[in-house]
Length: 194
Image 1 (cartoon, rainbow, N blue to C red):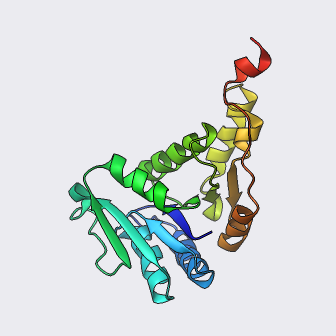
Image 2 (image 1 turned 180 degrees about the vertical axis):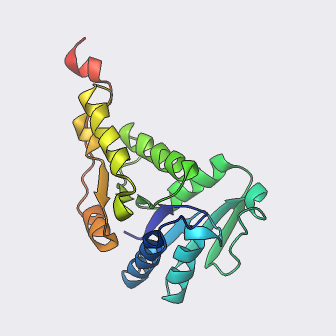
Image 3 (image 1 turned 90 degrees about the vertical axis):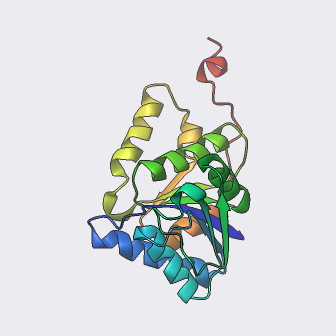
């Protein structure tokens, strides 16, 4: 695995464990010589992750739309920085540069970006691992809801298993190394012959 894309908050959040997790992930990526691809901000968890990875000698690639350069305060010390025209370009380039995707705690943008690449995986546009770094149970309600989607017939169990989850960065990256994507279509009623 050459690079991992990380989605996370441009704010630090209220729980100090979120910052600690961003720092731990930055160290882990650098130690394994896995490049970081992220949204290019110097603020919040995004900035802490990038700063840590850089301080540990890691590669950090930021991708940020022009409209957010000033709002998110684009990081000035990255290995490589891409300023793009739109959020669509940002997300596509981040995906193209990456071999896997991790979401740390964040807001609606974090969820939107993570679920987009997860959907692409489900539809067969890529076969890269997608994981949640579940810091202090931040994603517990979300994983419960994914389970409910399976129970209610909106998500296949094979596709639910695409979301790798761990509270530990090293364990999550280890699971990425052994990830095998499912080879089933997403259309449940076609599978059941309805």
